[in-house]
Image (tube, rainbow over all chains, first blue to last red):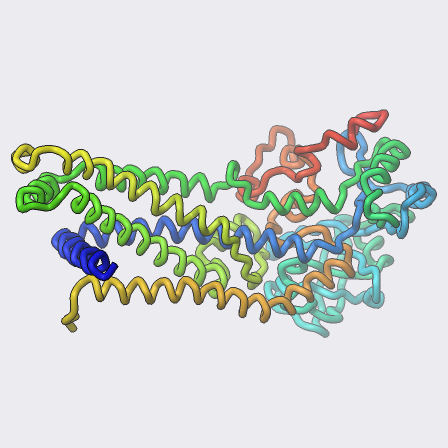
Length: 378
Length: 112
């Protein structure tokens, strides 16, 4: 065993000396490889943390949400629907929700106005999300004015700002009471935006949803399960521009690595020829190159992964913010609870280290089994 | 500063350090998770209290703000022939209930 370790150490010594002879090229390769792993690992860590965040945060969202469709478009829930739904067996707790969007032309941002169910603010008062408060520079006690869609100017006093920790779900919220909401949006009395309901037996959610769809054919039930599934597919890689951008980088790197690994330079061929001529066996040459590829690929994986971890969980994925932000003016500032998916990291490790090792080994094996004289002559 | 030992020794130390940092990242993740779980609970509590259905991740348009409640064709409803023009649309697929809307809708007597 000791002899084997000593032999491997000599091979690593030789490999490192050989890598050092082409220092610039190899350091460049290591950096590009690390950068690629960094980008892939950052996306993996960010999406798995966001998925977990959505699953935990939205676990208590309404079991079924009912929207009404008119001519294929989302419409208001008219009076009488809530009573009809309440009569369906299995339905517990039915509540009409009142919420809507408001585009603030002053700062070109979209807000979500919503009626607070519990402890609604007093008339003329609002509670705002931390993102909105930061963006408009307001705090409790300040006054905010909005011009409603009917053209009337409404002035509200900020009662409180929602906690900063809640920004990921509340950045753009404006909470107000029902009367203010109806007056601001000119909402017809007795109408609601949608209906939230809970089902007595969680196993009957689907049955109840089917009953709802049958009883109210113009309605569209959305189950909590579907809401959660929407977020499970967050950043669907088939459609994500992140992957589109990354796939070009992956391909570019694949070409670079393939070119570097599979096309042996004349110098490398001569080196193999000399090694064979002075008595190295084919197995030794292959082992030496295996160490070379392992040092480069494993080093790049570890460096890239560590940088990605720090980037996502200590710097809130700052480099991805412009992509996630899109055209949004109100972008929440948030810190994610780390959720590292071991399988994804193992997959990343496998797909970064293994293909590179194989790409290196095949041409080396071909060069190593040929006659040293022929290899040296090229 | 020049390293006096063998190159393999130096490589061993560098890799040992990287592996220790790699393992430490899992320990750090656990530490951060414990620290940030309280903040997550605040979000979950608010979401339950206000019956929220979505993360405020993409606030740029109606149909990206509440992804789970969006229409399949809402991108085209702002004006005729309006194509998807918000960057978030390319990051997020349509909601799950619209992509797999087989079971419930087929049982209704009238189409949506």
